[in-house]
Structure formats: structure tokens, C-alpha cells
Amino acid sequence: MSIQVKNINHVYNKGLPDETAALVDISFEIIDGEFVGIIGHTGSGKSTLLQHLNGLLKPDDGQIIVGDTDITASGASMLEIRRKVGLVFQYPEYQLFEETVAADVAFGPKNLGLTQEEIDDRVRTAIELVGLDYDDIKDKSPFDLSGGQKRRVAIAGVIAMRPEVLILDEPTAGLDPQAHQDVLSMVRKIHEGDTSIIILVSHNMNDIAQLSDRVLVMDEGRMVMNGTPKEVFSRGDELEAMGLDLPDVTCLMRDLRSRGLNVPTDIFTEYEAEQAICKVIKGQEEKA
Amino acid sequence: MVRDITLGQYFPGESWVHRLDPRTKIIVSLTYIVALFILHTFIGFAFATVVLIAAIAISKVPPKFILRGLKPIFLIIIFTFVLNLFMYPGDVLWHLGFLKITEQGLYKAVFLAVRLVLLIIGSSMLTLTTRPISLTDGIESLLKPAAKVGVPAHELAMMMTIALRFIPTLLEETDKIMKAQQARGADFETGNILNRAKNLIPILVPLFISAFRIAQDMAMAMEARCYRGGEHRTRMNAMHYGKSDALVFVLTALFVGLCVLERMYI
Image 1 (spheres, helix red, strand yellow):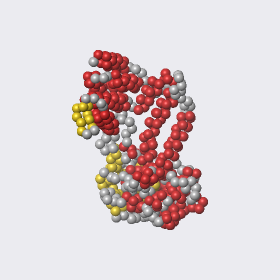
Image 2 (cartoon, rainbow over the protein chains, first blue to last red; image 1 turned 45 degrees about the vertical axis):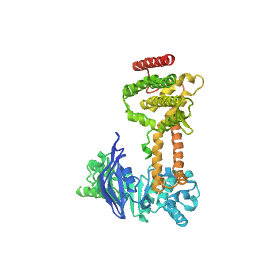
Image 3 (cartoon, rainbow over the protein chains, first blue to last red; image 1 turned 90 degrees about the vertical axis):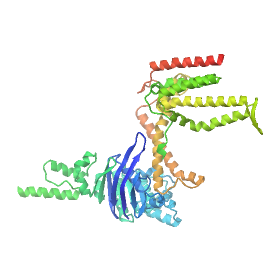
Image 4 (cartoon, one colour; image 1 turned 180 degrees about the horizontal axis):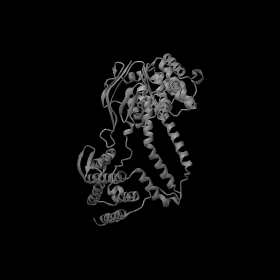
């Protein structure tokens, strides 16, 4: 499974006074097994891009190929694309509507026309995968759950479709620190499972730096950077100019450096930071 | 897409008509409508048409835009026309079987159709040139005297304002929910009516929940800022009549006078 995006453009409100170019000549490729993070300022076109990847929006021109299907072709089967590419929107808990958790999670698989047995099996697996107790929660109303639980049920609703690509648009927004960590470790677990590609959009640079193999940076509808977290976060000044943050650890390193400590700034895990700082301090002691 | 639905038919502009006080425009539109019922000849209607065309020209709203507003009512106009054409008793001009057209029927049919068209265009001039929000402000201000006898003018206007304010929000919400359900394989475009209606449940339930949530937040935010409605409230955009409003009122009075003369002497 791989995703190829070739020169796509998308303009909102074409021909009207408030015409805006949401995506400008975007190209990239995602290979099998990759965990890709997408960052960008609000309104930079991230959400528009995501909606293109599972056919909810069509590009004005350009091509998107998922696996071996061209999803921009006019005859492409939308159901097939949505089975392959699962998209979890921001605040996905607002899409819950059924009377019980199990019924809600079953909505996607049901639309795929699976047998009842298969549906039951998928619902159980999905609910357990997001870290909830199936037997305990299946008959509860989704509206009686806590915020973090609702979010996980909503994500389970997408996972139950067993997508090969899972796209998450800010899955941790508005969650408390504990629920935040729970969702992240859940995402990690999903990536280790059947879902080969994960695309994560987040404003939290720590999460992006820790989880992604590659980071794409969007700015005003353009893709301005595409590289490993190390490559992207070492261009801190450019990111800051776009109104983006850096991982906390990278900020610390930059701060230390500006105060005269000769440490590298392309570091974003605590362990690496510790190593680097120790090394520099040791070097100074030896000199002294 | 849901987002493409435009609300009302306000045509953004900065013309002299757009800048009139909303109250003036409400009163003038109502007067115009009443005057159309005073008139009883085609000469009178010709006069009213000229006045309306002048108003449209000053407002700079493209005629195409105005005619588009007529489209939904077109059927009603045709219906009244046909009904009058064939059903009115009088001197027969033409007949086929039980269908007959009378001279009086033809006159009446055209007469009513013209009146209807003028009525609709005349009243749509109000909504075309006035923002929905200023419109509610205007209505509130005009209903103020009625508040003394227990009409909750401010509350009514506030409800209308809030409703208008949240239509785009709810449309956006609908769009989001639809997309989220589509991403889970829901299909809103194919199937028979029953199936399609059933497919709306995954949209309507979350939409209602959102609406209640938004309403609750809104109520709380208003209370937190000590909103209590009613008397002594001042507003950010205070309305006041200007010279142009005075001119419009004089012209309107003149127009009504001429209409009354037409009724009495032609």
C-alpha cells in the first residue's frame, strides 16, 4: 500500500469574489508502513488535503493514487476508497448517533455490507484496540461516556472498517493529559496492527516529533517542507516564521545554545537532549 | 454542497438604497404593498412599475438577481393567471368544450398577475438591500410601541437575530457531520426515498445534539455577560433617520397621494 499525490490543486468558491486557493500544486508520496505527520498553521490547507485523500473532496486537477487505484478518476468506487482510507475528523465524538456504543461502531462495517458475524467480530476488535472494555461498554449510550471515551469510541468506528490507511485530524485536541497519552499510545498500537500507513495532523510538535517517520509542513495551501523530523525541526526559524511551534526539547536546546552552550539544536527527544548536554558539560570540565 | 446555500437574498452593496435606515425601508415597502391594492387600472400599475424600476436602478441590484427571486413564485403566478383566465364569467371571447375565455377574465388574469409580480419584486427590494440583522433591528424598533401592550418586541427580535446568526454555523456543522458519516461509508445520494430518509438519521441526531450544545453555551455566555434583555439597552449600531430618509418619506407620501387620486378619478 502506498499513496501518491501528484500536483493537486483545489480552489474554494471558484468564480466568486471570495475565491481562495486552498491547495496549490501539492505533490508527495507515502510508502508502505510510514507514519507521516502533517503540521501547519490553522487555515494552511491541512484539513482540505486530508479530505482529498479519501475522496470527500475532488481536486480541480492533479491525481491521487492509493494502492493501485486512481481515486480522482471519475468511475472510482467511493465505498472502496473509504474502506481503504479511514478518516477520523477533528472532534470525531460529534458524529456519534446510535443508541449503543456497539451499534455506533458497527455503522461503518454495516455500510460495507459485511455479514453480521464479521461485523460483530470487527466491532469487538475495534473497541478493544482503542483500549475500552467491550463487554462493559457495548450496551452503554455513547452520550453517557466521558469525553476521552467518546473520542475513542468514535475512532473505533473508523478502525472497525479496517482501513489500510488511517488519517487522524488532531485526535488529541481538547483532551486532558491522561486521555491525550491514551490516544497517542492507541495510535501507536494501531500502527503496529493491520493499518500500514498512518497520517497524523497535530499542533502538538512533541507528538509529531516522537511518532512520525516523516513530517510534511503546509503553509498557505503549499507544501513547504517534506522530510524527517530531524530535517524539518532543524529549520526552526522558518517554522517559527510560519507561526508554528517546535518540540519542547528542541526549544530548550535552542535556548541553551543562544545562551552560549554549544549544543546541537536538531534534537527532540529527552534522551538525546540529555546525552548532548552531558557531552558538552563534560567537554567543558575537561578543558577546565 | 450544503455550504453553498445562501440565506435570504441580500445583495451586498453600498448604494443609496442600501444605506437607508432599515425602518424607512420597512415602512416604505409596506406602504408600496398597500398602494398596489389601492390602484385599480393599468395606468396606475404602469406608474407603480416606473417607481419600482427607478428604485431598482438606484439600488444597483442587477435585474437578473431580482428575476431569479421570482422563480419560486412563478408557479403561483401561472396558477392564478390560468384560474382567472378560464373561470371568470363574462362576454365569451373564445371557447373549446367546457373551457372558455371571457373578456373580463382575460383582463382580471393579467391585472392580478401584474399586481402579484409587483408585490413580490417590491417586497424583495427590502430583503435585497437590507442585511437580515439590520432588518431585525428595524423590526424591533418599529414594534417598540407595541411592547407597551405586552408584545415582547425585543425578545422576538433577539430570537430572530440569534436564529440568523446560527444558520451558517449549523450549515457548517451539517457539512462536517455529513462528511464524517460519508467517511464511514454512509451514502446520501442513492437509494429510494425511504432509504434516503433513513440515511438522514446519522446526520440529524448529531446535528440536534450540536444545536442544543451550542444553544446552552450561548445562553451561558449571554448570562455571564449579564444579558437580561428589555429596557434601557443601547446598541452598537444605533439607527437614526437621515436626510435621505426624510426625502424618501416625502416621495412615498407623494406616491400614495397619486395612487389615491388614480383610484378616485381614473
